[in-house]
Length: 476
Image (cartoon, rainbow, N blue to C red; front, side, top):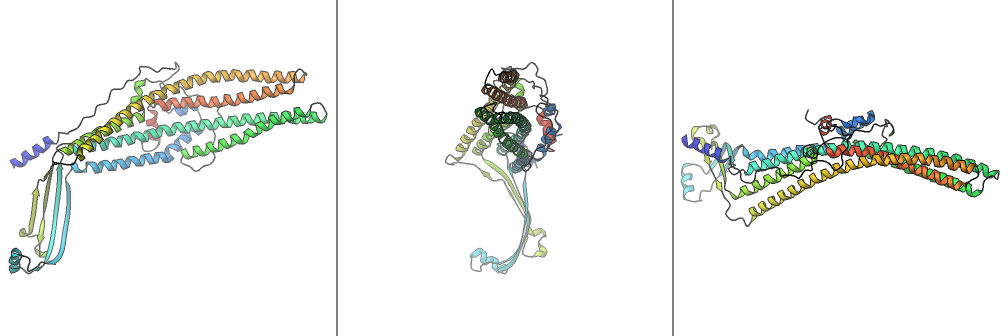
């Protein structure tokens, strides 16, 4: 009994040893502030920011995407796959117990040797064979090979979970950006149709004037050219709208088709700029968390590889009954048992283990550099998004002033033409400039909404957890 207790104590003590490096988060050079900051920034990164648009249709589309998007379903299924892998990897930490049985009849040779001939004198060479037994084995994880592999598998699960959260982050922002782009195209189509209608009225008027000899055929051709140019843009925007609707349907997990609209792009509310320090990204961005868990897994793989240098010790045992007479199978004399503690140690492997260790160490270096790169990319994306929304606001202000000036230009040009001070070419030129500026202003308006959406995407935050709960799979 003392020997057994001593053995168990030794096993328990030795099992606490694990070879290989323990994970420590690498130091990261984090800037203190952003290069571009917004004085109007608010602490809204932990709210469902898309509701700030004040468009119920957009809210419904995001909810539908979180429940039906196929990429998100694939990501959720991938987590279950890695959970199954971890359960397989950690199984050797526990005793493996099995059962078996045998029922058969056989005949042994009567001329097989002295020992066999002696058995034949006492028993018939043809006999029955009945067995039933339990067998078990348990590998003592002295050096932490299984525990390191389990650590790596657990980190892979967490990495996969963060990958799913990254899909949520990308999905929500993609739906919002796609919807804004759709409204932007609607507005450009509306501007084009209004412009084409105005050009059509001018064309009809000039045809009538030409019939009465007031204007030349050249001026009629000029107005017709202007009208046809505007008309050619209508199918272009209609095509872009249909393609954008189809792309949005895929995000929603639906077949291609029309998308309902709520408010126009002019009626949408601009979301606030989210506030946050650069250091917040380390906790807010799922892709950074994913990269760190991949680094944890790669670090644990080094220990699992190094543990192969050391002896492997197992406990094995068998207990059961064997008899040639089924009625005497469970009698005391039919009892069989065995136990042992086999030890296996590598002596010469031709570099197989050292190769695995080198591979694991190189994998850890790759994961480390990838982790650092993801962080740097995150800082860049936030800074880019802040610059984008700030400069886009300035661009829209300039475009507003340009559109106002061009409207005056068109009005004055028509007045000068009606009074005979200029040709209609000046009016055409002014109207074309105005049409182009109105399209550009509408396009940049959509860019501003998307820049603000990208601010939330770049900074991450608690809103990802809220969106996760809306999928039905997140933690409450």
